[in-house]
Length: 369
Image 1 (cartoon, rainbow, N blue to C red):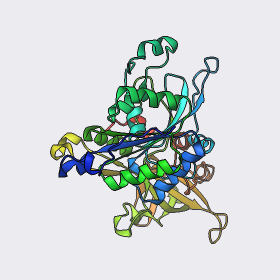
Image 2: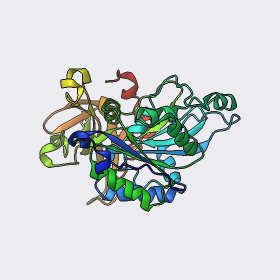
Image 3: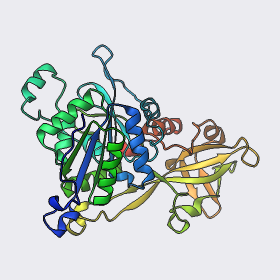
Image 4: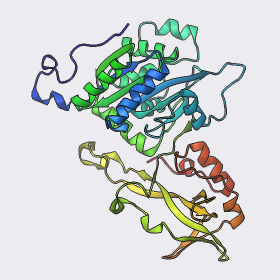
């Protein structure tokens, strides 16, 4: 049965003054069928909803005590198995998390980013004591993530129970009444079994926005099994907004001058400065870009049989206006894992690449921004 709240944002009965449109709200929906959830996400994408406003939580599988926690989860396989591959490249902050209930969850967006950072979670709601007795491994991270976005304890517990049982969850967090209303209509059209609405504090949304830019950081007993690296491509966007565009087309050679290939793209990340340095902590400023990989192409004629690899920037020895000189050999580059420009790199992809070249994992050795 569909459960929905009255007083949708923008309704006269719900708006006490003219400033109410600026209030941030989260509309949340549960589905019984993963295909219904995927169709609703596709509608949101086609309606130009900002992807950074969209949250997704989906339980993947239960890990039994005998099996133990998996050491690795390849995110691309998780997406494919969830039937969300059609929108996987659009969602922001996509990650696979393992919660204390020993199940793997596919998460994305603001709620997923906050969920990954919850530490020392405590039981929530009137049934918390009996729940804790029945499941010593559960500490209600899901419910706490929902309450942080403004939902009541009772509704948060209900949402958690449904997600744990396998119901896909989609949410949108926005101050735009039209965006919220369109999402509500998309959820209803695709047979959402529960619809909820909550007022969300801007502070939690700012925190989530920063996490989506800098990448997920685990907290407490939450394990990040894999995640999409928050990397951007120099070839995306308008020409005058492309950082490192001047590096594209340069030849890549070894220190001995042996030709390897040419740069076809640069993968970089955006890092944010301290939020306390911004006026009133509202605008996310002091952003800087850091190059992480040169995409090098080699072989083939007229793009037939051409290969691409992602070369970590620590391998680069020197650059000039014509050449990029690297410490790797031609054989090392040509035997490296192939780069697929149609899909983003996951952390596991990056681990494989960095291990091949023997360079450190930059997201582990650098302090969180």
